[in-house]
Image: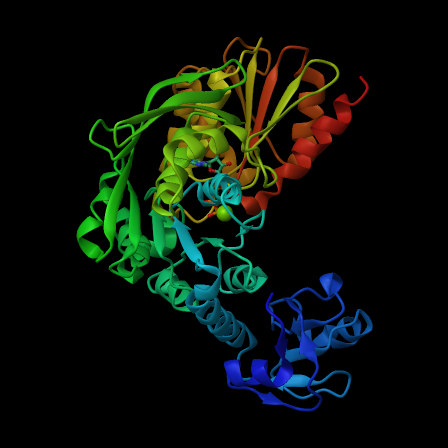
Length: 472
Ligand SMILES: Nc1ncnc2c1ncn2[C@@H]1O[C@H](COP(=O)(O)OP(=O)(O)OP(=O)(O)O)[C@@H](O)[C@H]1O
Ligand SMILES: [Mg+2]
């Protein structure tokens, strides 16, 4: 973060400073993560109120807190809404950084990434690619909301050359608001799927919301649009920026040819753009990563990198955020694929395709429910069960009451309710039961995929499975 005084912070957020005027060198919302010199943002949450942790923040060295009321324990910058104020602080810092750099001969390039699936994966690829060209801020994890995005912006300082921001959306106006915190120079739209369909009503509604990113771009900016998704490439008329298309489509500006998967499920392809061809061999698992890599390539090219440098950096990029297609082979020869970070119909299908691509004696998919799908949820779960069988999964294990439709779908297309059947589909009530069953059925050579929506916490099961096999 750039160093600011408390009165500068108060001025930027339109707040009232109760006392003192120290220097702020960082910002955090988590009292356990406070470092000396930090401004602690007291976020009023549903279960916990950040204001209860002012003492802990002070003890850890916070210089001040952003609060809704004065408190004796620390100097406070008092505002009506700390989260909105955090956004205003990030906006002030971003404006300063985006306008700076003249003397150093370069300025900050900000990239925004949105889409229903693959934002974090793409951000992690792009962050590693841009880091080969200059100092880059692109933290691991999924900092894509009104708290995470400003915190990411505040990580940047005068030395930062590239800032990569993940932008999530749970409704109209969200991405527009994030773009007011930090207007991107390059906007990447990955896909329009059915994540949060419940809130949006329809896929077209999702497209309207995701397109706010390209609407926010300046005329000298670049919109990087996935040519393989009609709703995404259809956003082109909504931007004043130059449009670069990416994908497998032969007319995409940045495309992949000769895609192959190695036996660990990692894709290799030829990156083709502007008459240049460069070989890429991804380290991340799954064919869906080709689309993410092309989107990252489109953004990196827009930021000024050469195709050759982009191809080399993509080939060197490794998985950075947890629980996304983490493939681990246990000592006993069972392979666990932990993709339990989150799930929606598209990411489930991507994961099943990746599972199908891994060599295995038996493929087991341990699937929990997909949350927030709205009225089509029951049908989507059944379809997933059918798709799992079609993808060559030998045993479907549906975990929890919300996931029974997945087993029903598999049974409807010929799976038997028998864990030992050649083609089986079973239901278990919870993680513990799933673990028990898997301990009994898994044998060396099996590959087991674990995936569900975030709220079902199946990463715990994946971790248990790895513990089970350790040293076995
Ligand atoms: N391009 C893609 N198309 C379909 N599925 C994908 C794609 N990229 C990643 N996935 C799947 O989606 C899951 C989530 O990926 P990632 O965390 O990158 O998405 P995200 O958009 O950041 O999600 P969130 O909205 O939860 O932040 C991965 O585990 C993988 O299964
Ligand atoms: Mg994410």
